[in-house]
Length: 228
Image (cartoon, rainbow, N blue to C red; front, side):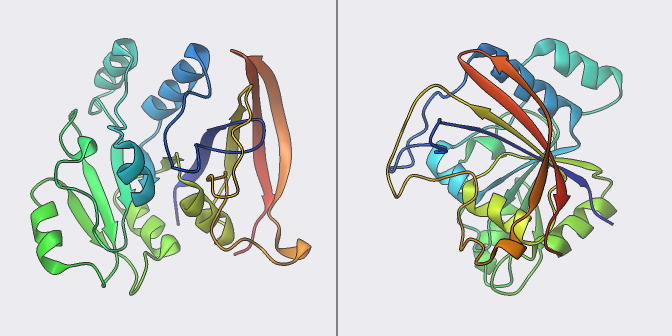
């Protein structure tokens, strides 16, 4: 068993998540920010990869006071469980998500991670070991499910998202497409990683809905089929 996985991203019209220097840029507007905050507040957990943490240092907290109040009314922490997939435990000990806001944190590492760093991280988060050289995503999701996590919001980056698609672990994809072109062969995209080779491997999506939002468009897809 595993949680329901909802991938949510904002990208430029040419499919870039940020610049080639991995510099965060404002792609969407206030309406989309509110939408994303609501998804986060309604999720049991929110996840990012270590690349996103090193580039953006996000706190992954719920921003709306009304949504925080709603979570409290249901007996929940202010924020969902915040998870970082970090095979070698590279996350800085002063990373924002380890210190800002209340709620549980989980760092998912592999057996290759430095033992002293894991011990230091244990003061701020629960460290899960899943995999030998890199984090085994199916194993990690199984462990998260056993901890009561039923809905997981995945915010990136592109390498981690591709890993989820590769393993057949994505159920829903929402993609805000902004009104700019970023360009650059090295700029991260929605799904990076090694990429699929043959068409038979491509995950198939079904368009569930679309709407104009801010200065762009929001697309919602469900996953029809994915490699297992």
